Length: 526
Image (cartoon, rainbow, N blue to C red):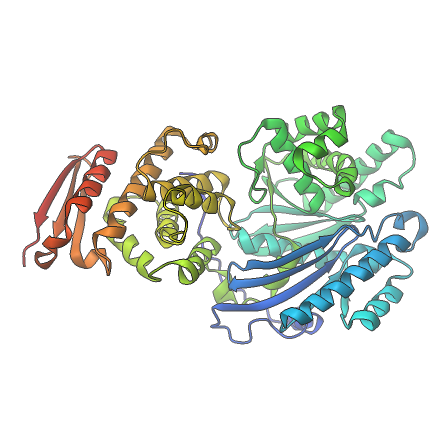
């Protein structure tokens, strides 16, 4: 299976003034009790150079769900490099959006609302004036953060959903672009640059002048951070739009942007492809807004230079950024080290399964099949067991496909695209023996033939274990797997023989067949 490390990070001991200042800046901690597992509903407003967004998080503390998400492409920082002031139209649109967000927050009775503003407000001559106007009109206090802080929060957003991230986080906004090192769960050096598309629109000298400006600025970044980084993690709407175009060019079967991975050559090919194609046609194909698509060509030139200068082996897309970084900022370390995938699956089971807690019992029952499996593989098995019953309300005819859709499209962190498909296929087989003729077949191409077979085995194992004994399958019997002899044995407990009825037997034999094994049933000694 594709690797996805679940390493736990050591607890940081630094609690000096920097950490205390952070709490003063952003208000009270979201987690007053370090042992808290449930995240209260929290609103975060991000006032950027291009967009103004409200996100309301709700759900499991380590892997928050998006209760509400609204964005307005106000263009607050458009023309800032030329005039030194906020775009008047963008300012009016941003203020209107913030008034709406404040009203929404009141209607939702949010216990807290954290509002941050980045490059446009901090650099504009009238930034402080706008800040005061917002507070008068809405009651919202904008915390204006500098480039270093912006880089740090964006990097922490990546770590929220990608705990094992190692490399450079690159967050592009309208008027700036920040880079930050991430390694072993910590944020290292950070730098900011004037490489936002709005700023590049004001560079003189035509295409040649823009290219030279980008090259010079990226070289400065390389001098500050070095070039020995295997991965670059992309944060920001312009990067996500670029990634969606890369998917279109490659005819990629999945459109989930989080953890989408591109090779350097693919990036360079897509940059050329964008330059050679009509932007309106591309926008229509990908559903990208006109305001966003307008910035993509300049952003793609920046990405091209990053690839040529830093020589990464892989470029990965993160849907998590500064807003998620604000949540991560205030999580106690004991929550940070938890696996975001498992925490999200636990939350889904707790809120949607018929018998919360059964997933753990099912996992323990099936564990003999995975005695020699890697930690990465057991992690996915565990996630599947937690999710196995969360779509029971769906119509039986469509339950298998709903399971697959949920796994492949859900907002899950710490899960590669191949792992999403593996998880989805296993859950499909939990409800259905055959996958032949499924509309989902194009997605199976992200897996090897061996992985497809392993997903089928896991699905059929859950299909049997989930119905074998309603209270707890491990109390009714034990699975014994002898891979060398290809024997799968079910040792029934003496008082559980009646549970092994006709349907249970058929599902057990189907699992054995998927393993290419002989099915054996015995009665355990009393």
